[in-house]
Every structure is written in C-alpha cells, then in structure tokens.
Image (cartoon, rainbow, N blue to C red; front, side, top):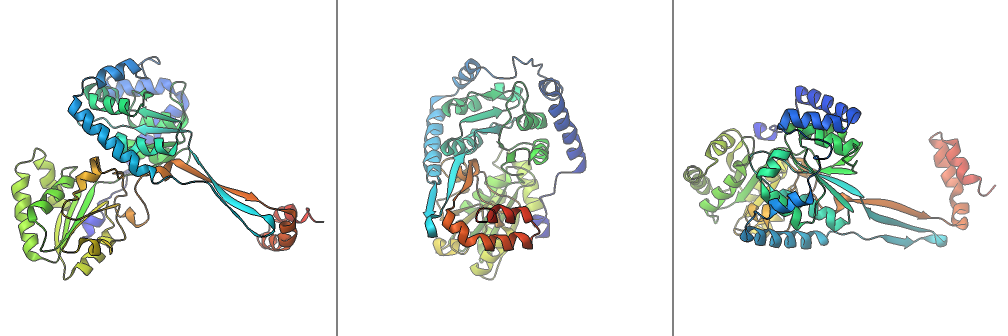
Length: 414
C-alpha cells in the first residue's frame, strides 16, 4: 500500500535543472531559442515562417482521416460540449442594507495555450477534453503547440483540430514550447493559461512557469480502483483494470472487494486477457509494481480504503452500486454499475477525462469550464453604509497596523 501511495515521485533535480535552463533561454532569446531546440530535439529546421502550421497543411492532413472515425469524433465532441455547458456560471448580485450591492462578475480568460503531446501515439480525445471546456467558457483564442514530426505523422490530431475550428497551431513541442507560451515570442503569443499533458520535461516546464501563467495541473501516472462484490463479473473487472494498466509501467490498477472468490477470478482473468494485448509487457510491469487485489471484511471498509487512495478513476460494481457509490467522497470520476467502464468517460460520455491523480482527488477536481473563468468581486457601497461601518473598518485596519487603510474609510466622514 505504501508503494502504491508513494508512486508519484516528484520531478528529479536533473530534469528540473535542464528544464530551467531551457525556460530561461527561451525567455531571453525567444524564437531563436525555439528554432534551435526544435532542431536539436525534433530534427526539424524551422524558420520563423514555418513555426506556425498553415491552415492548408491542417486541412490536408485532416482529409486523410476516414469518415467512420470522424463520425465518432463528432458525436464525442457533441457529448462533451453538452456536458460542459451545464458547468457555466453566471454573474450574480445581491442587495444588502442601506443600498449596498455586492456581487460577482464572471469572465473567460482571453487566451489559452493547449499542449498536444507527440510520441508514438496520438490522443485526439485529450485535445477535445482540454479545448472544449475552454470554448464553452468563452475563451477567445486557443493556441496549440505540438511537436512537428509527430503532427505530420498523426493526421487524426489535425482532424480533431479542424472539427474544433482550431487553426492557430505552432509546430514546437517540449519544455521550450511551454516556455514560449508562458513568456511569448515574436511568433508565439503569451497566454493566460497552459493546459494539456506531456512528458517529464513538459511537466517540469509547466511547474516552473506557474505564477507567470496559470496551468491545469502536474499530472501523475494514471490509476483506477474498482470496488466490487461477488455479483461482479471477473472478466469485466479484469478488462477495466487492464484499461489503465496499459497506460504506463507506473500506472496503478487495484481491485477492492469483500469477495475472495471474485479476487481469485479476476487474477485468472488478468493473466488470460493480458496475453491477448499488444501492450502486454507494459501491463505486466504495471501490475507487478503497482497493481493489487485487496480483499476487505466489508464494502464499508472498502469504501474507506478507496477514500484513502483518492484515485483518479473509481468503478463501482456491487449489488447496490448506487448506495456503495454514495460512500465515495474522494475520486476524480466515479463510474457506477457494470455497464459504465472507465473508457466511456475517456472518450465518449461527455465528462472530462483530465482528472486529479496521485491522491489529489482529496482536494482537486476534473478539468472543467470553471478552470477557464475568472471571478471578480463587485462592491457598491453607499454613503450611509460607509458612515455606519467606518469605525469598525478603522478598528480592524489599526489592529493590523495599517493606518492608511483606516484613513481611507474615515476621511469620508470627517
């Protein structure tokens, strides 16, 4: 259990030092540094004219994607947009005594940067999950950065960008792309917030630039906990555990159950199903290091354990799944019942799959529209109310040693 709870090891000092040097260099030299690092790390020789992908290039790549995949993509986009529209907040105002009015004004950020990772695989769902909440919030400008070589090799990313009408795309990746978004260059605009996953150098860069800009989070390895009883099918449970174990060798897949018979059945299914999967080596390492089949005395104990783990994904498959789920308070997302596998949330249901990891569901939430909104307090005081309260304001200000604060209130009635 301690190994599982402690697997989110922080970014090491060497990665942080290397990334810090890159961020400082981009801050100083701008596009010149971006071009140099793109040549060094990606083998692509940019000029300032080729850093931004043309609309023609995006359209041409997108045209390579088959209609069946596009249809699935469009329905997923519709579901995600519908769900996130429910998260919109509105301005509000209330009237207090003596004509005082207090309220809150809610406005979207102006410009957001979206990091789209490269690597051997393409993740169009991640583009949807990050971009759509920003669009629903009303963000005027979404700027995309992505490694150049992988973008050209994975037309599905271009296709989802086209479907979302995102055509401001810069072909730079890695820590230098994050730095470019944070400080701005002659080519890449400075943004208000950076979202999207990446490798350890991207994560380190996001950590370093936080404060100059906002970020979504520093995401850790993926994780799933299935809480189930004897009514659950072992093959379903095993398939769901494997859906997260295949992410990476440090992913965690855990069954919590009050049925030893189910645990034994799931273990057999894990072995059987892993043999059929292309990422079997990753899965075996993940399960060996961070997988667990935990038998508890009762589902109540199981729920307490899940709340301690505070995982990214929780699946509930019990005789009374609704009642069991009501006891789970710490989770990024909860999937209730035998026909709600975690993968429906990853791709299609409409809920966001950018979720807190590493136990941070104790205090963090899924990415949503609210992450792209600013809340501004509104105060309208009247002369009558200031006269009534100035003495109290003065006493509080002087208690903190701020005479000018006190004077700002009392000068108005002296």
